[in-house]
Length: 72
Image 1 (tube, rainbow, N blue to C red):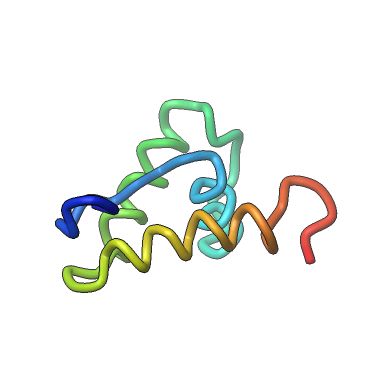
Image 2 (image 1 turned 180 degrees about the vertical axis):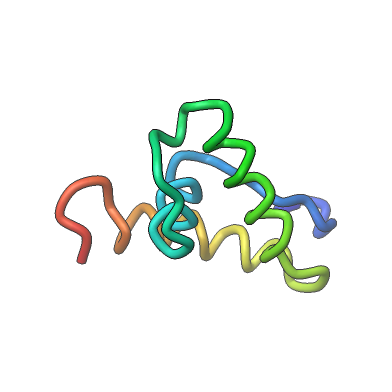
C-alpha cells in the first residue's frame, strides 16, 4: 500500500498494538484468533483513499505514542 497506493490493510507489531488497544481486543496478538480479529478490524478501518498515509500514520502512532511499555 505504501508504494502502490492501493487499498491493502497492514498488521505489523505497532498496528496490532494500536488496534488492540483502541478496539479493546483481549488476548495476545500472536494468538491465531486474536490476529484474525485484528485483521478484520484493520480491513474495516483502512480507507480506500489515502491508504499510504493512513498506514504510515498507524505504524508511527504505534512506534511513538502507543508504545509497548509506558504509552505516552
